[in-house]
Length: 220
Ligand SMILES: *[C@@H]1O[C@H](CO)[C@@H](O)[C@H](O)[C@H]1NC(C)=O
Image 1 (cartoon, rainbow, N blue to C red):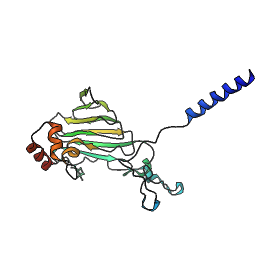
Image 2 (image 1 turned 90 degrees about the horizontal axis):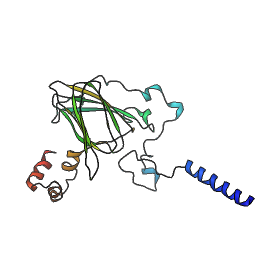
Image 3 (image 1 turned 90 degrees about the vertical axis):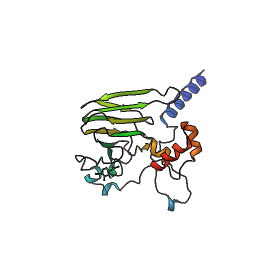
Image 4 (image 1 turned 30 degrees about the vertical axis):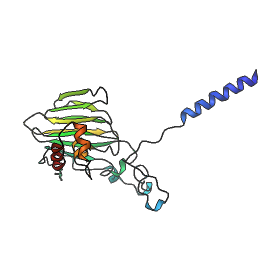
């Protein structure tokens, strides 16, 4: 009888300790991380190397200049100024970053994905038509027109966009749940990959004539 109780106690203890140990791989902080055996040609340790604590300073956690608009004179009429681990080195391992997005009248931040971060956006000036689309098979669009002070969330990994519906400039700020959320702009990745994807693949995928695909590949 005692033995049985003892055994149960050990099983309970084991299941408790194993639930405290993470059984998952850490989330990647970059697109790819090919394993190598020779540390001499290694670059990242899932993020960046850490500076010696004694050498860290306030400026490692500081960035200035987000009061300045990005230049929106480009084909899409928007500009994203990112403040991630590349701008603030102290963000390393903290799972957070920031962006300012400027929109010319009727400019857009074209459909894109952040492979490593959820985004929460607040509109400071103007009006934006925003939305995201969920995965297959529903492909449901969640969209809304946002005005000054409005906040919207774009869940990690989903295609989303922001379009300035007004004839004035618009400004938004976004927080992202990664030090390096990454951006895949759909049109650029699909039609502007390097080297290009075989046009046959895209003609069938988009149900378009090969000539249109080749035109799009030239444009991007
Ligand atoms: C965004 O704005 C910055 C600052 O004006 C500029 O250097 C950069 O080229 C712009 N990017 C695009 C894509 O227009």
